[in-house]
Image 1 (cartoon, rainbow, N blue to C red):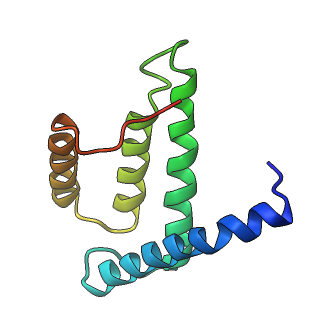
Image 2 (image 1 turned 180 degrees about the horizontal axis):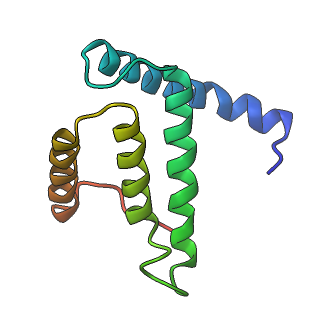
Image 3 (image 1 turned 90 degrees about the horizontal axis):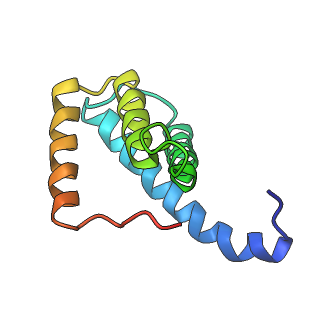
Length: 113
């Protein structure tokens, strides 16, 4: 994908603010002992780009709803990443429970095509 200079100038400041905020949360999680130390800006970029990528597979779900379920893939990917970065599996289970509850109540943004 190629972006013009104008598009980049319009979008990148907001994207970098989101990236910086996410990076700060990774630093806080590492500082609290919830994650092992690591390069927080890289972790933030990996989660943001990876989640965006796997969510795009939902646009192909008509050919295989289970395999191409972007929401399921995003959950699997982020859980694997956080576990690899040292997150406690029982805590990850709690997060998934909260996300399921929020989804059931309609408090998560729906995937759109």
